[in-house]
Image 1 (cartoon, rainbow, N blue to C red):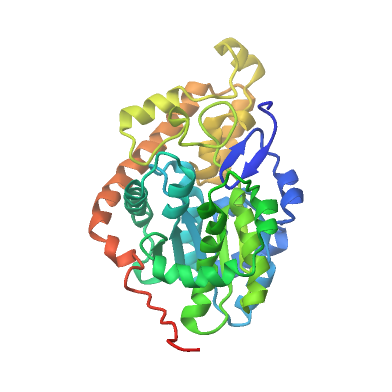
Image 2 (image 1 turned 180 degrees about the vertical axis):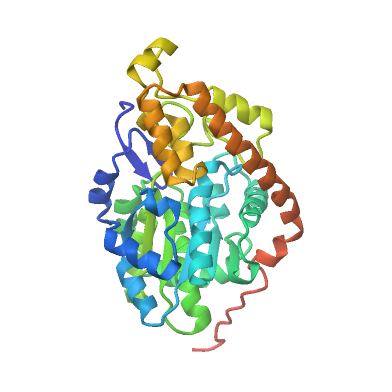
Length: 383
C-alpha cells in the first residue's frame, strides 16, 4: 500500500486525507455558511474550530437546529475508546463539545468504549481497559465539563443499562449490513460484530430516560461515522429520532503527514507529558521549512504542510488575525521554523501545566460523572 492511499475506518486512518472525497464517500454534507450563521445566532459566537473549518461536515444538523428553534432541546453524545493516554488530538472534539454544552445548555452522554478496546486489542485485559477508562476520564473532567449535565458511561461498568437497549438495536441490524459497513470477516470475533449495537445506545438513552423523543447531536471525528450510519438505520425502526452528527478533521501528528496517533508516540503530545518531553517533540517536529536559513529567507516556507502551524491553527492560537499573520510570515520567509516552534511551545507548555493540575484535582470528582447507579431502567417482569 502506498503512503498516499487514503484509508479511513473507525480503527485505522492512513494516508493523505482528502476531506472532500470523504464527504462524497460517506454521503455527508459540508457545513454551509447558512448553518454556521444559525449556530452563531443561538450560541452567541462561533467556536474557533467552526470558523476555521476544523468541523467541516454534518448529517441532519439543519434538522436538529430547526427542532431547537421550535423548542426541543437536544442532547449531546460523544466518547472515547480508552486504549492508552489521551493526546491533544483527542481533545479536539471534547473542547468543541464543551462549547456546545455551554452554549445550548445541553446534557452530555459521554461513552467510554472500554469493551471495544478490549475486544480489538490482542494484549489488552479487561482490567487494563477499565484502568484506561479511569485515566482518560480525568482528562475529560479537567476540561471543565459540568457534572450536573454530564454523564460518563463505561460500557463495561454499565453493561446492565447498555445491554438491553443494544439488544433492540442488534435485532434490526443484519450481519450483511455490519460486514458491508465495517468490513467484518470470518476472523472477526463475535464481540466486535455485536459492539456497534452497544455504541448506538447513548444516541437513544436521552429519549428513553425522558420518556419522549429527544434530538441527539454527535460531535466526533469523521472516522467514527460508520457507527452512526448503522445507528441511524435502526433509529426509525425503534421509534427514535435519527441522531444528527457534526464531524471534525483529524489533528495532524508532529511527523510528516498523517493524523496524530498514540501508536507513534514521538509524533503526538500526551496530556501527561513532562515539559522536557514536550519541548523535544516540538523541536523535532516536521515543518514546511527549507533546508537552510538562506533558502527560507529567500523562498519562504510552506505552512500548509507544517505540523507546527497546524497545531496553532487547530487549537492553540485563538486569534484569527494572528494565525493569518503567522501564515504570511512563514510564506514570505520572515519567520524561521525555530521561531514558530517556540511560539507553539510557549502555548502548549502552560496549557499542559494547568491541565495537569486540574487533572490531579479531578481524581476527587470521578464519582460525580460516572453513570454507575445513576441510571436505573427497570424492565417489566411480564409482557
